[in-house]
Length: 138
Image: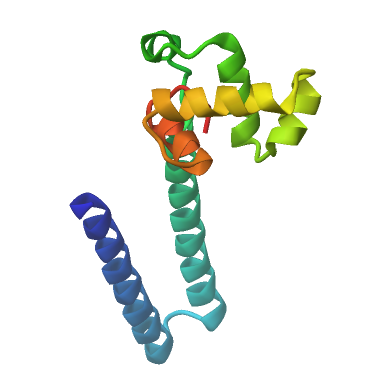
C-alpha cells in the first residue's frame, strides 16, 4: 500500500513539475503551446499504459487455479461442487435442479451440505469462502 501511495504521489509531483516547466517555457516564448500540450499528453498516455499493465498483471495473478486438494480436504463431492459452481453463477435451486436433471430437494440437500462444509450461513457467503479457498475460479 505504501508503495502504491509513493508511486502515485511521485507521478503527481512529476506532472506538477511538467506543468510548471510547460508554463515557464510557453511564457518565455521558447516553446509553442502545441508542443507543451503534446508532451503533457504523452506523459498521461505513458502513465495510463503503466497503470493498465499493472492492473492486468494483478488480474492475472488473482485469477486462481482451482485447488482440487482443498476440495478433497473439505469433503466436497463432485455433485456438490457442480452445485457450488451453479450457485456462483447466481442460479436458484429450481434452475440448478433443471440443469443437473435432479429434484429440487436433492439440490437443497447439496446446498445444505455445502453450507456445513464451508462453514457458511448463506449461499453468498459459501461462494465467497470458496473463492477465498481457491476452489472456485474468480
